[in-house]
Image (tube, rainbow, N blue to C red):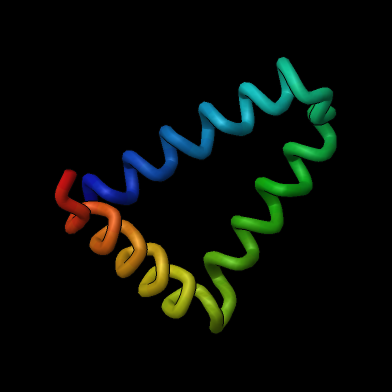
Length: 64
């Protein structure tokens, strides 16, 4: 659960910065949001979730 909330906050910050600094239009952001919404309810959602969890685990396992 903590990973999901962190990912949502991180992605929201990235979208905000893209809108403010890189010229991403609000309409484009809405389209991206709708794509994510429909991907979450598709059959590929478990695979995306698993890949995200594995990548986060790999990043968390890096020793500096």
